[in-house]
Length: 192
Image 1 (cartoon, rainbow, N blue to C red):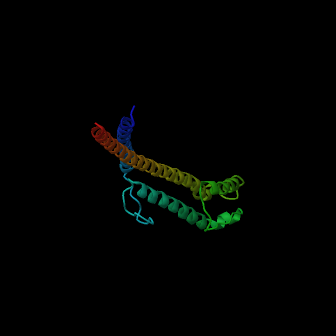
Image 2 (cartoon, helix red, strand yellow; image 1 turned 60 degrees about the vertical axis):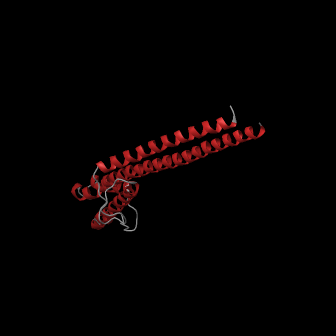
Image 3 (cartoon, rainbow, N blue to C red; image 1 turned 90 degrees about the vertical axis):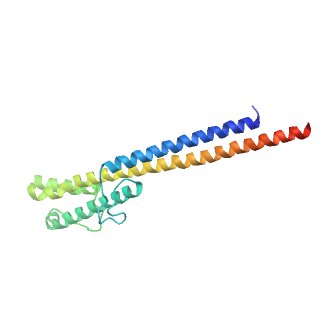
């Protein structure tokens, strides 16, 4: 196979691959945006960015994930502070600057359950504190799902970008092959 033909075939493969990648990337982006949009989630007004926008793109998904974490943390701190005297009676100090998530609330739940078991506090007193770990678990699950959608958008953008790059390179190869063919023809005419 001549160099000219190899360049032309490589160029066409690059163009076709580029177009396919752009279509696939666009389809993945559209699917992710459609699925998020179907949930009809709106970024709360107290979000640090994109407040009030519909969650249907990577930026609004990040804003929603951030505010979910913020709400979970502030809710946990508020509940723990409301019950700080009760918690102090079983040896737990509430630190408003600490992070209260699923993992860090585990020891709190263990201590509260032990206090309920030995009769130091009642189940009714413990209920709001014990509920915090479940809320933190739900918040982390929602954040993980939103971060996964952000990754899907990123992969789609990468595929589209690589498709454009492949298409441009394919086009350049086909143009170079055409130029090579013209120069070969000119040489043949000159040598004839």
